[in-house]
Image (cartoon, rainbow, N blue to C red; front, side, top):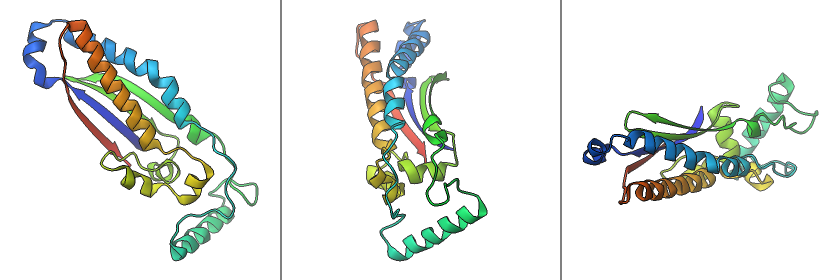
Length: 192
């Protein structure tokens, strides 16, 4: 599975939560509104259809690794693992259509998940880069040079910007609703 998560944890605001009976419902409602206002934009950015594949396709800038990958590719075509027109990969649209955004409340945490379940997570990482939030350089390392050159979007940048915008807007709207500053503990976690 290929996914990234944003956790807005208001557990540290227990005194405020005790004073405000509707806090959980308000936080969830505002969170859902904020997320789903932005879903079309993030899905559009992630679903961008790149140009035609570059030829020859570059799997790696390391010549030995590139040759190994090229041998695997042509063997996979012969075995029928890869859908092609006999020479080039045929895009099915499954990867582009596989993006999902979910938002839900779990305990004291509003969770926002961006995922792509169309394929194995490693395959998605080769196309879009990893969703690692530790380092964009680390995330970019997974995206194959040929996919980057073709114009596939870099998912970590798109998802990080989406999370930053959701976080800032949620905090502002919660503060506006309660007439005070709201500062949840924010954690980001990713797989691939």
